[in-house]
Length: 404
Image 1: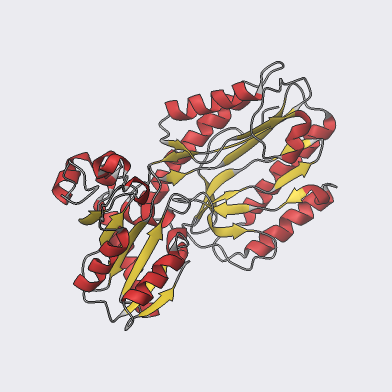
Image 2: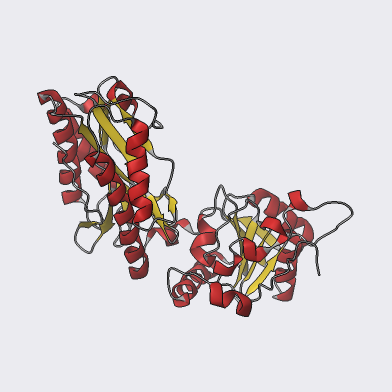
C-alpha cells in the first residue's frame, strides 16, 4: 500500500454512499462542458486547475472537494478523456478523513501531505499523479493551460520540464467569467446562503441595547446563522460600535454599547460551498437627526442604483449615479462605491468600482455595498445580494433594512 494511501478505500464506489453534493452530478458535467468550450476557443487540449486553502474556489466549483487540511490540489480536464483529480490535503494519511468522499470525479488519486512524510519513505506526489493523467490521456505533446493562482507557477514550471514538447500557457482567470453567470441550481443555493446571513444580521440587530458587548452581538449572529444551517462563516465577522464604527471593518471587542452609538455588522454564511455577504447598521436607541439622514441617504443610494441596474448597464454609470446622490446629500466625501460578485467565492465578478466599464449580464449574482463611512461618526451600509434578471435585479435577502 503506498505511503499515506490510507486504510479506508476511496474509489468512486467507496465514496458514493458518503457523498454530499449540493446539486445533481449533471450540474458538474455541464460546468465541465463549458470549460471544454473555452478550451476549444483558446486551443487547449488539457487544462490543469490548481487550488489550495488560499484559493479553493475553482476546485470546489468543479469537483465539490473541500480542503480541510491545507495542501495542493489539482484537477486535469481534457478535451478527449475523463478528468483526473489529485490532492495531498490528506489528514492522518487517510483521504476518507479528509473530505475526499465529497469529490464526484471518478478518477481520484491522493498523495501524502508532504509535512507528514517521514524517514526514507518516497511516496508518489500530486505532481506524479498529474504527469500520469496527462500521459495516460495522450496530451504529453499537446497544448496545456494552467488555471488559477494557487501554486500555478510551480505547476507550470513542472509541466514545461516534464513535457518539453508540449506548449504550457498560464490561464489564471479562465474560469472567472464562467463562474460569474449562475445556473438556476446555483441561484437556489445562493438563496439558501442568503437566508443564513439574514438570520445572523437580524439576530445581532435585534439584540442591540445599552450595555451589550460587541462580543455578545457577534455571538447572537453566529448562533442564529449556524442554527439556520450554515456549514461555515463566509468570512470573519465585522462588528463594531461607537467611534470604532467609523472604520467599518473591525473585529468585535468587549466594548459595551452606549445610547447613541452607531452599530455596524458585516456577516455572511456558507451553504454547500456558496457564500452570502450582508451588512446592516443602526443606532443604539433613537438616532439623532444627522444619524438618521446619514443612514437614510445610504438606503436611497442602494434603492435608486438598483432601480437602474439591468443587463447591459455599465457599472461605471451606476457609480456615477451613486456619486451624484451622495454629493447632493452633502455626503460625497464619505462614499465608497463598492460591490462584488459572490457565489463559490466571496469576491468574484462583477466588480463594482467607479469607472469600471463592464456591463451587467443576466444571472450574475453580486453583493452591493455602496457605503458611507465617516471617521469618528459611524458607517451607513445596507449590503445585500442581488441577481440580475432579464429586465432588472432581484434582491435575494429579506432581512429588514431599517432598524429605527
